[in-house]
Structures are given as structure tokens and as C-alpha cells.
Figure 1 (cartoon, rainbow, N blue to C red):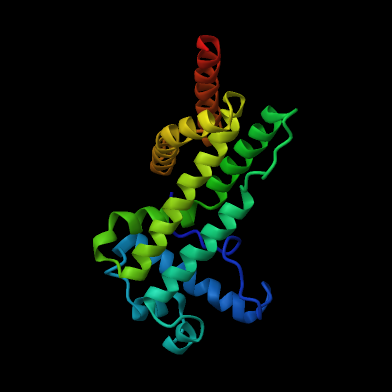
Figure 2 (tube, rainbow, N blue to C red; figure 1 turned 180 degrees about the horizontal axis):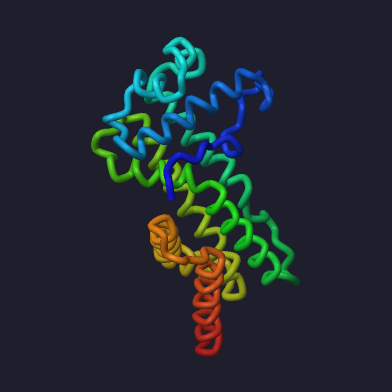
Length: 221
């Protein structure tokens, strides 16, 4: 798949901008151009001048919204990550009578967001591969996003393992969160490469695997 899909539906406009305003449209053009060029040239090979040429805008348009190239990508990643995590937020107190329903809804939500936020996730992957060439603030933001994704998996698995009790569930959630995250990361990369991967099915298979482990632990206890 091409890396040219803009984040028009995934980047929140600032508080003073309406999504349909000319200002927001210009901002979207800048972000779309930046995404396309980074996918082709990497972060180091993408300059403000090249972004302007690709977007058909002058430099003043870019600097109206962003201080520099680093600020552009920090804002892009930060806003998209916040929207992604907000959309798949785990209920603070899921209904204990319907844990399967809660899990199913979360799985559907995550799979849907992985599909619709593909541009952001591809950008994040490229940035991670080029981490040594990134400025400190951008590296820090990526590290925060990665930490947030791991925390999400720990919360989710804590819900799956809840029948074992809070302490034991927390231990298992911490142990298996990196495995689950790595599995989904790999599935997403394979999907972007063109393999017929169903991310929702992979999510459900992971939950089935964790549930089988839960059943075995419960029997042994």
C-alpha cells in the first residue's frame, strides 16, 4: 500500500480551527505531504522546502502552524496517538458480568483503528527505524507512545486475567503484554507488505491463547 494516505480524519484540529476551515485544510495538506516524503526519503531526507514543494505551499504556510520540521512531526505523532488511544480506552470498571463482551468490543475497536490509522502507524514505524537520526524531543515522544501502547496491553490483559485476582492478574499482564504487542506489530507490518492478514482475527487469537492459559492456571490451582 502506498504511504500517501493523509491523516485528515486522524489529526485533531487546534481549538481555534474548525475541521472544515481553510486553515485546517492547509494543515492537512502539510501533514499529508510530510507523510509521503518521509515514507520515500526518511526523516533526515525530508526538509521543509521539500514539504512545501509537495504540498504546493510556501514556507510561511508551514511555519504558521509549526515551528520547524521537528515540531511538525512531534505534533503529528502526538495528536494521532492521543486520538488512537482515546478511541480504544479500556473501561475503568468493566462490567464483571460481561467480560467477554468488553473484550470483544475492545478487539473490534483496536482492529478498526489499526486499519484507519495506518498512515500514522507507518510513520511511527519509519521513525522508530530511523531513531538514531531523530532529534531528542521526537525520540522522547515516540518512547512515550511506545510506553502508552505497552500500558494499554497491560490494562487489557489485566482484564483478561482478572479471575486470578488482582495481584496475579497484574503479574501475568506484565509478562505477556510485550508478547501481545509484538505479535500485533508483526501482523500490521505483514499486512502493510500485502499479506492477507486480518488484524481483528489475530487479536481474537491472542485473547483465546491467553484465555486457555487462564483456564489451565485455574485448574492447577
